[in-house]
Image: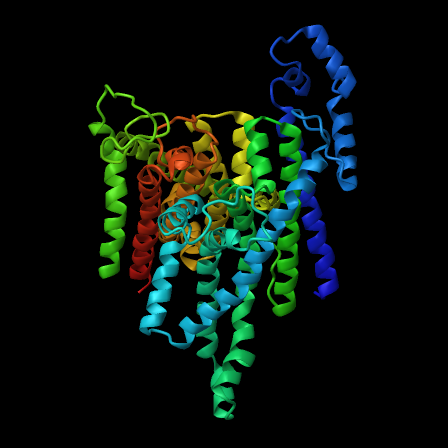
Length: 314
Length: 257
């Protein structure tokens, strides 16, 4: 299969996934007892008033018609209107997207070099004290709940030692980089463990392989053997794990934003869930789902480019 | 050996507190002012003794995670085996394709979404964590069963006319055990992660529930006054998670070598 035909097939699958998730989100919310009109009518639900609101919002029309309208609105970034404040949902999304993207991008930018470095360090000295220490720590820290780690770090570095600000309340993320240190450490802890382990395993395999032995016999320098010959082959499995990390990262960002009071998409999500502001929840679900599908698509394409023989269709 | 010692110890403390702790909580509790230095750890955000809250609060986290793991295996293994052993390719596709959609959404988002729609309740929490873990279990069981059903031993059994019970359940089941057992640790820690994170975000639990994750969330306001009311439950969750990882990792190594 060529890269082009693979891309088309994989993109079609991604589109189906997005459509399925979007449909699921719409009908899950639709299945709820009581709709937006009941919520807006508030404490004294007068049937006449509910019917009036329903007509004004177009809720009396058939479900399928509204579904089609909602679906057609999505590509134009029309996600509907918030129940609580009456503002368009898109406003909430644009308001929260800055800090979240900044956090996720910084995490990814730090994650890849650090985990490759740790993995290579452990693999090159396989079996040494350093290797065993790094492996133990990465096994132990894997899948620690972010909020627990975050709170312990805040208590130690934010409160007891007072080296770093404990929360980001009222701070400008970019003017005061110190605010970002603890959130980034917390977000990095989990993915670094899993990716560095994969890099280590791939690197150990690659260093024991025939082509590396051959390259050494040819007299190619050890540094070049390691980084030009072994490393690229060790990276292929790690690429897909980086994509899987985006899943964790989105989950992690929700928690980390809640702990450090960062006004991003995660905070918007938690607030709108607490207020049962379902159009906003719907809109966020769509954004998160599209992002995840897009990242997985990209990772599969990169993995296919790196190792075209392997069938990587999910 | 040393690592298992550390891991075992790390699990033992939170587990003992979680399972035996509720027995030591007195029925009558005095309420004082919030975040005062009374008792072992001080008082919490509504003036309850934080130590008793710690004793009472481990049960839900541990039991919900365990129950959800068991349920996801009970549902996922037959589902995966059915998909693997069916003669019709269409059934396989119909069973497995929807799982791709579930896997395409961040798990914490699924959890928040369903819990937002279904309302609070421990049953909902168990259900959603099961739902999130279920696709992974189903996929793994399908892959394992598929590999086993191609083995010569199974072909021979079929030709001998062994019953469906003997081939599909007894032989396939026994052969799958090892692969599935190797996966239990991952499933359990991820269930623990989800349950704790969801409770922390206030999904599926009452806001004043005696629960370690809820305590961490609610008592954060008093971090400067009574840091122990936050740090102790957080550390218990960290210890449980790290301990589980170390113990299961060691067990895996033992099986492999």
